[in-house]
Image (tube, rainbow over all chains, first blue to last red; front, side, top):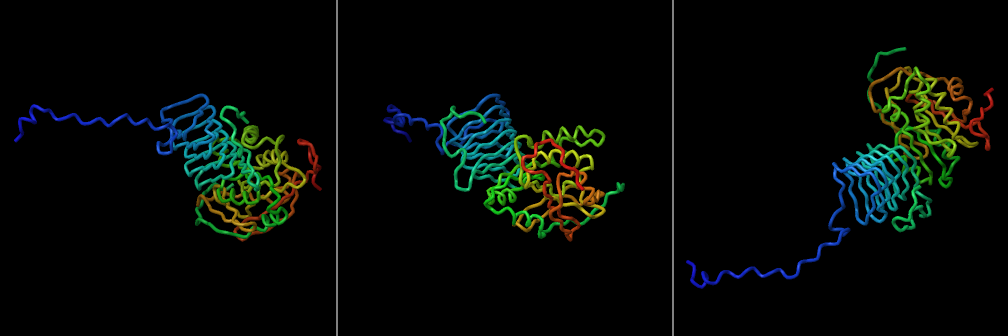
Length: 154
Length: 217
């Protein structure tokens, strides 16, 4: 049974949670990569400061030198791609420049040159082009990080 | 020409490659050679060559030609254009080792002549060509897949059980098809029906690209 006091005193509004939490910064590791969806087609240069998953079609240049770039199974890139680590599960027609690594998964197809200190080709992958893993002393063409936008296309 | 297809039991195996060993013995791990692989890309081969500090170019020629259908026996120019597109520009690169694996068994005489013209462009004095030539009447319908296990050992897998007639290229004929650009340095008869050839370029250092090599004796 409810009491009169409850009738006349509506329940207090829930206390506010206080100031709204600031939005998470983009590029945080807990957020996940930015995604170019399978229906998206981009003609032009793509650059940014976060990891990127490409499931659509990109034609141009992809430059995320400090971040990871993944060409998903639905992805199709006719582009030179610059990244920290580059993983290919779809199709790439262009050159890959990984400052740490390039991995071509079993479903991946790459036609172009690869420059990275570590390159991995999984069984079932398709690759045509040259592979340059740099000198054995650890020096590598991409070891020095150039500011985005200042790099020239090879 | 026999057109009837036969099936064989799939073969996979490992064998000692005396031809490759001979080349690796000459070119130690610190030589950082430049290698053209006309076969398909292989992660294990890539790792192996990386240990040598080698620079590797993979052409995957047979698959590329099959996908585009550019192998018209009636028009050699089609194959010529395909090679020009699928192989690196010879004016800007050369190689120390060209791996043809067993591909020459799957090309016609005209195609080998055309391919040889391109391969000459990559040669310098110490360029070698490694090739496996079948001596059987029949061979697998498609090229084998080879993996380098160590400097003297190869493993191979047969992608199809279907067989096809083998051209059975004999050594003198093969060298003529290669336009006299290579001479035999090593030749080994293997148990599984292949002859392993390590051929050396007959070109001298400084030979201009496009010049005809002296006729073989």
